[in-house]
Image 1 (tube, helix red, strand yellow):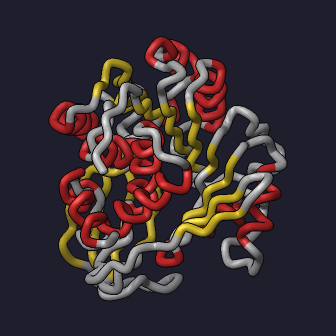
Image 2: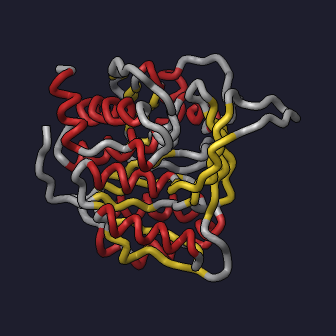
Length: 312
């Protein structure tokens, strides 16, 4: 299903180096358990999305902020290697490159803590400097590992330029008092959906009804990712379920949400409908769960197209 696109994917996002350990299970509160395989890896939601989209064939521009250190330089090298434009990537001496600590359990679950580091120096003015690369053929993809003010300003810049604006509200904020009129598609997962509405992550509720509450903040579409249940597209006029694919040998869910958002944006750039792009995203995100970590788990376009051909 590879399709040519004249548009650019502009990622307004984050980079964090990932510090990873493997465990047999997730530790309980106050518990110390033995881990193994400590390693550093590329991380951060913006970085993950940039790599996945580039491997799917999108023309990707990354706008963000890193520290002037070895971790930041390694990230810049990765972007160049993956074919991502970094003309608007800024390096700072004041703060270190952001970092995330990840514990991965043998059953494929994980817990993550992050210090966004130099990402907090990413300002609305930095977005304004990159505004010239955003137009009505662009998709602007934003996450919340950067200051909320900067993320919302980026949405407005994208909206004013006629771009399609996707906001992935992760890590989740309470958005009940936030104006989302510049956002075309809000993409929380089922936990983030609840947090965005001031609820506890495990609260019982109907996801479609919760999504409609977020529509009231001004966004046009809420697309909820539901893991093995697929995804749910909610607009003022409709609720559409997009089933997940049956994926064997799932080993690691880390980075699947980023993979989905990158492939959703890539599909929209190629002219797919939101439902078609969500189905594409379900496939790409499912495939990434068959490999460990984030960047090493991201499949290229030929692999994804072959999977889709096998699965109708």
